[in-house]
Each structure stands twice: as C-alpha cells, then as structure tokens.
Length: 494
Image (cartoon, rainbow, N blue to C red; front, top):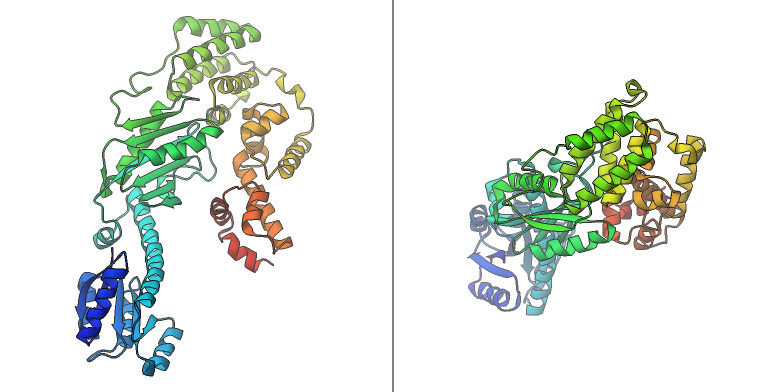
C-alpha cells in the first residue's frame, strides 16, 4: 500500500478526500492528516509518506511552499495540489515549473481515482528502480541505508536461485562480468532477476515462491542446450544475499553435468565433484602414454571416445571431467614433438573454450580431440587452406547474411565444418574477442546502420532484423554496447 498524507485546513474537505481514497483508490491508504504546511513537513520527516495531497491555501505555510520544500528535501515523495477555480492561474504557474500535479475543487471521485492511478504507475517505477539499486548493493556487499531497506524492501527475507545455461563462464573473457557488477535483467511481480557472471547466468530473487519461475526460465534455455539451476533451500536474510549467491555459484560449479538439465536445492547432502579429486587410473595413464608416444592416434581417439562415454553414463560432474581432461592433456603435452613451443596459457584457453562451448559429452570429446591433435602437431587443419584473413572475411560475410537467424558458436561451426574450439580460437587470436562478443557487436552496428538509413522503421522490427526476438532485451544489449538506449539513438542519429 502506498501511503498518503493529507494537508487540508477544512475538516469536511479532508474527510471527503479520505473517504474517496479509502473506497475508490485501491493500493493507497491515508496515514496522517494535518491542517497546515508546517505541521505537514514535521510529519513527512517522521513518516516519509509516498504522496502528499495538499490544499493550495492553508494557514502558516501554504501548499505551494509545502510542495517546494518537499521537492527540495524529499525528491522521492510525490505531491498533488487541490485548488479552486479562483486559484487556477496561481496553480498553473506551479504546474508549469514542474513542481506538482493538481486537482480542481470540488474534487470529483473519478478525477482523483484516475490521477492516483497515474501516480501509482510513477510510484511503481520509482520503487522498482530503488529495489534494483538496493538488491545490486546487497549482492555486492555494499553498505545500504537501513531506512531505504525498510521502505523499499519491506520483506526481511527472500527466496533466491541461480540458473546457468550450458557450461561455466569463461575464465578468459575480455569483459568478464562478476557478481559486483550484476545488472538488472528483467522483472515480474515479486520477482527480480539479474545477469550474473555473464549473459548465460541469471540471479533470481523473489519475495514469494520461486521454483515455478526457475522452471519457466530454464525451460526456455533448454532449447539452446542444457540448464543447471540451484535454489536456496530456505529464505535468506537481506544482509546475507551476497553469501547466499556465492554458495549457489559454488554448488553449480561442483554439480553441473554436461548435457544434463538439473534443478536442486542448496545446501545439498552430497554434491558431485566435491567428495574426491578426480584422478585417472594408472592403467589408463599408461595406455595413453603408450599410444601418444607411438603416435597411435586412431587407437587413442577410440579409447578417448570410450572413456568419455563412460563418464557420461556415470553422470560425472563437469568439474571431475575437467580434472580428468587436464591430466590427459598433460600426458599428451609431455610427449608432444615440440613441447617448448606450446604455451600452457594457450592450452588453458583452448580447454576453457571447449568446456564453455560444449553442450554434450560427445561435443566436448571432439573439442578435446581437436586440442590433442594440435599438441601432437598433426596436419588436421589441411581443410582450412585459405589465408586466415580471407577465411575470417568469409565467416564474417556468412554472419552478416544471417544476422536475423540464431547464431551460436555451435551452429556456425557446424555449418562451416570445423570444431567449435578452432573457430573460437580464431576469433580470440585474430579479432581479439570472443565469437559471441563479435556477433553481438555486428548486430548492434547493423542496427545502428538501419536506424540511420531508415528512421521510420519501428525499433521492434529493427531488433528482429538483427536477430533479437525480444525488443526489451535488444534495448538492454544496445545500451550496454553504445551507452544509450536505441530510442535515444534513433532520435539523435546523425
């Protein structure tokens, strides 16, 4: 309920306004009444109402001075002035200065109801913006004013959850987003969602039940791979949001199974990947060493396919699988023909890309095999005989011709007939950015071009033309890249 202070020196007029508000204006309540502006300011300092309705003429301090003081000292409190026809010019001058909204006496119930509906929309927006600011601060662990927390986040505890699409966030993103930079993603009633470490992670906060919302978001993500969601098993104090989300992230890191859709509660009784360190069996290590040292690559690949299938059947966590893969690559590197020329950081980046981009165990196997071949200096890239610049130009042409279509690392690499790891590495090395970041930049640049050349086209149509089915999401991405919303750019494009 939004709280109203009535300032009116005539008791019958106060009773009349109060009765209209209580019977016809849903979502509002009168918390206090007074007969002059000076007393109204004292009440405002103590009660901090959301809205003040004041008569223009009152003893001691009139309505214009009261509203002026409100706007000066309490910018988040809205004000409405009531006045008679004889005061209209006086009231109009105040309106033109941007100070107040107003109602002419005698106030009609429908007029007050319509005006309060408008004020409710403004208050909803104000509260939402304040809630977002406070949640961001709480997630970061920043200090917050107790008064603001009490006013804008009245619940003492909240349900929280975290969703992750596909693999973990890249450790080598050039613009890595961490928890301290969480940004608003979307909002529903009693549900606030934020972007997490990257665009494939969502943090959810709810004042009520949260599981249905988590399933709804996860069901959309499943179409593009797999989704892992962790829900805190009990409500979390506002002051503990940072710790709570940290635990959810740790749980997902430890429990993600590649290709497996999961929703689980935290803390868990047992978590995959947390009970022991994954270590390859000695027999298998010796088998790998023998095959690698004798360049028995066909046999090695068959053996790796078997073991990856075994890991998939056993539903090993991605954390365990990654540990196993590191041990395999360590063995391969040890027997590589030119180990000194192969930097550890290059292998780490390639492995990171393979783990982040793969949406199935079979795909991860192929990407790891791609790394293995590169370490053994086999001639696997003979299919890519074009010069690198020419080859990248051909990829960019394909992307530009298909911007309106879904473009993922997986779909493009499949179309081009190459591994995701190789394609991702090309962009890192020659474009100094990730594939996804490059596609985003192409889309936003194309959107700017379309807005410049066709100012009459609706923004929602431009969004679809560059591959965004959700205009709101397009606007957020556009603003992130350019610093301004597309509507402003559209109106001010040179």
